[in-house]
Image 1: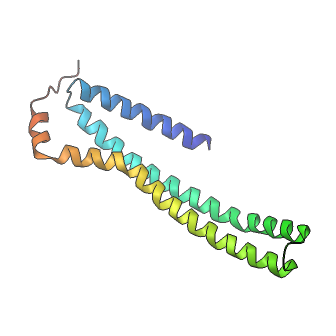
Image 2: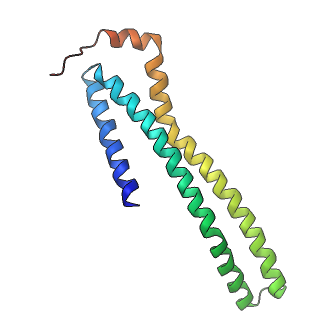
Image 3: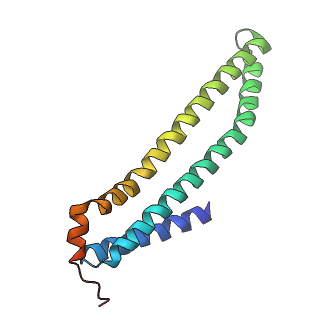
Amino acid sequence: MLGSGAVDICLGALLFLGAMLLLFRKRFAIYVLVFWALLKMLVGVVGGFFNYMMQQEQLPLLMEQQKKAMEKAGGAGGAAGAEQVADMVSSATEIFSTVALVAGLLWVMVLPVFILIWFIRPKIRRDMATWSSEQE
């Protein structure tokens, strides 16, 4: 958890640096922001995959606890009813975690993809060709 926070801080600092260079119209901003976009997409995919895998590892334990709690409470149908409800909750949780993974990946990709597309546009490339390449 600490590692992913440190990576996010570094990515934020890199984005800030790229934004400042872009604000002052330095050509190096292009390289910094494209590098940030590619790195952000990689970190987002890897992070999303690990979060999904952690959820899948925790799911059986969660369902076992749910089943025991329902059996102890004496829900409708006893042990058979508890098993049925646990299976239904398990299926719903798997569906929701998959939807959350896809939505999270889309959310993480929006800004990096926008930046990559923006810098590919011919009009923007012509404008950037006039920018200073000096390191002041």
